[in-house]
Image (cartoon, rainbow, N blue to C red; front, side, top):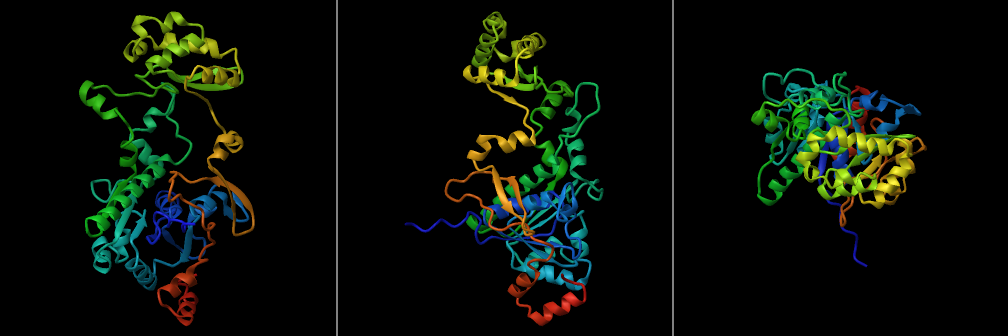
Length: 400
């Protein structure tokens, strides 16, 4: 039997100095594919995410996802000796992840220039609200602000009503994923091209803006300002949410042949065969009529009846999933997207699986989320500190 392949990022050392969402999500993603992620957090309470949303045995269940596969080292970075410990860790790392306000690292004597003098190959991922340059760089920025400035929040509403948030911290997550892409590019450049380390500068609003599709080209070419459209997808028809007896169903019948099958299924071949509705441009011109026809067909039926009929017709459709729907769905289970994870307090909690799916070097959960400072001693010993030195640092409140 051949030995198992090493994980994709085995041997990559990551120091994570961020907190809450964006930086730690990037660290989580790298850790799931084999990177050794050492998370530096403040002694005592640790990362504030430990206390966000629903708490089990004193710790957020969200923490169990965000910090799996990480080692926690509690160091007080406000103290000079704590900063020196961090520099020693970073000197041996491949990647540094941080999402502090611009200037914070510089204030600790850890500017990119200073860190690259210690470790020329270091890849530094910096995630912030507005980036490391520009007139807004010093303003505080959270994901929700990035979503607004990036153009997303303007579109998330019913026409004429207050913009609403997506419901999760999508701005932070998009920034984290862009950051991970940047890390992989920088590591590839270093490994394959012999390049030095570099800085990856990710701004929350820019990560959101990057997925806004035709927003700016349409404004540039036509002066068109895209507006909120509720559940519809403006300029693409039909694609909307339609009422049923017991909920809503989303239908994407915007492909030319799909549209014909959809109209045949709902008994409206007159629309399906209409020459002016044969392509998307024609359908957009009559979208209100088409939406009304689909809604008239879905309304007296249940969600499942609509789903079954459209599946038979090979028309893309889906119901609006709740957490309960996801947890009970056999497809999620079949693709290992719901995993059982044991916490360090002995509880069992179900958590999201790992994305993307790699055939030869898949991601894994190798360790559950740590308590504050669980790995301080082990990591400091790896750095060469003696038990007496660690005890002295702990006694002075520099580590936990």
